Every structure is written in C-alpha cells, then in structure tokens.
Length: 129
Image (cartoon, rainbow, N blue to C red):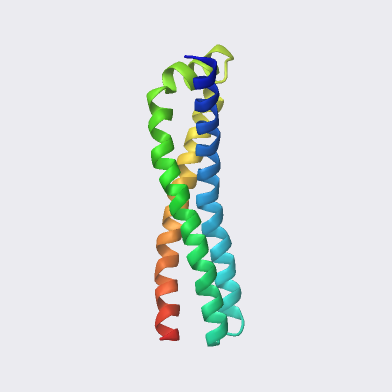
C-alpha cells in the first residue's frame, strides 16, 4: 500500500469512528432537547423550533449513517492488512476488539434512539397540524 493510500485509509477509519460518535450523540442531543420541549412551553412556536432542530439533526444522523456504511466498505476490505496487522504487531488486539464492540453498541444505540424519537416527532407534528 502506498503512503498516500495508507493516509487515505487512516483518515477514512478516523472519520468512520467520528461518524459513529455523531450518530449516537445527535440522537442523545435531540432526546435532551425533546425532554426540555416536553417540560416547557409546548406552544406552536416551540413545536416549530423543535421540528427545525430535528430536521437538521436528522440530516446529520443520515450523513453519519451513510458514512458508517460507505466508510465501512474500505475499512472492511483492508482491515486485515491495515488495522488488524497494526494492532497485532503492537499487542493491542484486545483494545481493537473492545473498540469495535463499543462502536457496534453505539451505532445500535443511536439507531434505536432515532427510531424512538421518530414516534415522538410524529406526535409533535400532529399536535402542530
């Protein structure tokens, strides 16, 4: 693998990890905002504001999920030669496995959070209509 390809793959892997964090953090942040909305003034202006934030956060979540899927393709293809070989050479196989388990849990949690939020957002849209 050329040095430039190695850097590109390393950056892909980094952004893949960032996308995982963004997926779960966007869901958590929206959940916090939803809780504040439910506890406060639930007037039409507050509902519209929350729905605008939801639209932006949903775009971020979709972008993150797309990067997780698409960025996972080269990561999977070169995993054995790039990530696994590097970790095994440094005695960090357990750390690499833990990282991937945590990443999988975060993605699953983020998707589950977004699915639950979808029902709440639909109810807010109905209230507003």
